[in-house]
Structures are given as structure tokens and as C-alpha cells.
Amino acid sequence: MGGAADNASSGSSFLFDKSAKIFVAGHRGLVGSAIVRKLQQLGFTNLLLRSHAELDLTRQSDVESFFANEKPRFVILAAAKVGGIHANNTYPADFIAINLQIQTNVIDSAYRYGVEKLLFLGSSCIYPKFAPQPIPEDALLTGPLEPTNEWYAVAKIAGIKMCQAYRIQYNWNAISGMPTNLYGPNDNFHPENSHVLPALMRRFHEAKVNGAKEVVVWGSGSPLREFLHVDDLADAVVFLMEEYSDLGHLNVGSGKEVSIKELAELVKEVVGFEGDLVWDKSKPDGTPRKLMDSSKLAELGWNPKISLKDGLVDTYKWYVQNVQQ
Ligand SMILES: NC(=O)C1=CN([C@@H]2O[C@H](COP(=O)(O)OP(=O)(O)OC[C@H]3O[C@@H](n4cnc5c(N)ncnc54)[C@H](OP(=O)(O)O)[C@@H]3O)[C@@H](O)[C@H]2O)C=CC1
Ligand SMILES: C[C@H]1O[C@H](OP(=O)(O)OP(=O)(O)OC[C@H]2O[C@@H](n3cnc4c(=O)[nH]c(N)nc43)[C@H](O)[C@@H]2O)[C@@H](O)[C@@H](O)C1=O
Image (cartoon, rainbow, N blue to C red):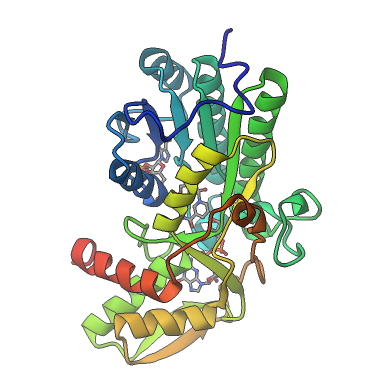
């Protein structure tokens, strides 16, 4: 099998040829849709997009036929089984199996059918539950994982390792970025299965509209989380496609953390809900803290631009216009 050999360290410019065929896997999701917006703003004209209904990436032979027929030049892998703490904890088989299937099929076919460069997206949950803070890239595989999302984390770690293995054995240009907790337009606002930020935005909005006196927030409020607007992530993805071609995965964070209590107060203010918060301590807190050390990416020249307050205002505006009934 041929594959795209001998381009691992350099490759050509990603930004130079705006007619290059780029497969953005998962283009209808939070991350994939932001990457599509960014690429379109930059003038790319040949984006290769398939919905889940059109191409199920868990089906190996369908994925192989797709790559054989379409032969994209670049791949950005933003398709995955994704969810918040409750979904991860409730559907462990889905989170490990679907993610292993999608990423294995896409990475292997991309290599076999001559893709020049692929970017794989992991998550900050790959790191040990009690990793040093801020978490450097080399904390990977140094301790036990957070139990609520270990199945998803194991799949994501396998994705990083698969990119590294194909680079080592085939000299193929696959890189990995590890985003922190993301939010923005096209997020999943499901009441139970979503991440905390969209879940609270919806709950506060519905409470405001219905005149409710209280809103329930899960856990103790003490866990710390780092949030990045998805438009900043999309900007970082383009930066990595242009500037980074190396073995190690890179953290992509905002460098700023807030407690869940602070986040809840901020979302409440942005939405304009005037009632009280009630903490449901029967729900899990998850990992106590996961601030990533994104200094390697900063040293390469990339930094985020959108503050959490501005990002929340932008996201709430989008929610009101696009999601709420
Ligand atoms: N959201 C976050 O906070 C974070 C996300 N990430 C990573 O970013 C990436 C994207 O996440 P995000 O955008 O939030 O997730 P979303 O759930 O918003 O989007 C995932 C996308 O993948 C598609 N997809 C899922 N299963 C399949 C399948 N079997 N075949 C084809 N397409 C499929 C979905 O299509 P459909 O909806 O039709 O099923 C959807 O378009 C993931 O790798 C995730 O791990 C990393 C850190 C944080
Ligand atoms: C991105 C990352 O996301 C997941 O990890 P997580 O950071 O723990 O995700 P979360 O956003 O769901 O919760 C953050 C905190 O917030 C609290 N919390 C309060 N109230 C609600 C609430 O209403 N919904 C949710 N979901 N959480 C709530 C919740 O109890 C927890 O303390 C991984 O599974 C994995 O998918 C991953 O990589």
C-alpha cells in the first residue's frame, strides 16, 4: 500500500492553495462548523463535507471507498462521539467504541489514500486526574484517569498514539491538538448530555422565560475548568495546519480557569436570570481541575483572542436566534 510518505516534517503550505481539497470530518458539529466558517473566511473553495447520514465514519469499508474516490489533500478530524460528564459516565461503551472506530478508519484511510497532512483532535481529559497544573503535554500517561471520562480519554490517547506511530513508521504528517473545554455556536444544548456551559445557558434561559425562581446546577460548584471559544480553536487549527508538523501533541487552551460556581454566575448574568442557584450534590464533580499549559503553542506564535465574557454574550445571542423555541 502506497500512502503519503516522506512529507512528515515539512509538507507544503496549507494556506497557499485555496483550491486544495480539505475533508473536514464532523462539519455540522461545534468544532467542525467553526473550522468550516474559518476556512471559508480565508477563501478556501474546495471543502469536502459529509454529514453523518451521508457517510458513517464507523463503517470501515465506506470510509475507505470515500477516500479512494475523493482523495482529499488535507484532513481535519472533528468527528467524534462527544458529550458532557453525564453522557460520558452513562454510555462508556459508545464513547470508547465509536471514537476508536471513527479515528482508526479516518486516520488509516487518510494515510493509505495519499492525504498530505491530517490533524486529529483530542481533549484535555486525556491527562491524569491529578496531573500537575497547568498540565504540560508530557503529563500524558503518568497517572490514573478521571473515572467519569476514562473510556473517551483512552480512545483519544489511542488517536494521539496512532498519529505518532504512522509518523514514525511511514514518515507521514499526522499531528494532534488537545483542546480544552470548548463552547460557541452550534454547541449541543441537550439538557442532560451536553457540557456544562450550554446546559446552563439553556437552563437559565428557560427559567427566565418561564419565570422560575431557581435553577439547579450539578455538583459542588468547586471544580475548576478552562474554557475556549470555538472560533479561537478554529483559528488554532488553521495555525497548526500551517505551522506545526511534529511528533508531540500540543495543548490548545485559553490559559484562564474559572470555578463552576463562577461560570454559573456569569451565565446567569449574561442570560439575565434573576432567581437563585441550587446545587445538586448528588451529581458528580468530575476532575477537580484541568488547566492546560499551552505555552508550547504560544511559543510557536498562537494565542487566543476571545474573552469568556465576550464569548458567552456571542453564544447566547446565537442560542436565542437559532435554538430556543
Ligand atoms: N466540545 C468540547 O468541549 C470539546 C471537543 N473536543 C473535540 O473536538 C471534536 C469535535 O467535538 P464537537 O464539535 O464538540 O462535537 P459535536 O458533537 O458538536 O460534533 C461531532 C460531529 O461528529 C459527527 N459524527 C459523530 N459520529 C459520527 C459518525 N459515526 N460518522 C460521521 N460523523 C459522525 C457528528 O455528526 P452528527 O451530529 O450528525 O452525529 C457531528 O457533526 C471531537 O474530537 C472532540 O473530542 C475536544 C475538547 C473539548
Ligand atoms: C470537554 C470535557 O468534558 C467532559 O468533562 P467535564 O469538564 O467534567 O464536563 P462537563 O462540562 O460536563 O462538566 C463540567 C463540570 O460542570 C458541572 N456541571 C454543573 N451543572 C452541569 C450541567 O448542567 N451539565 C453538565 N454537563 N455539567 C454540569 C459538572 O458536574 C462538572 O463538575 C468530559 O466528559 C469530556 O467530554 C471532555 O473532554
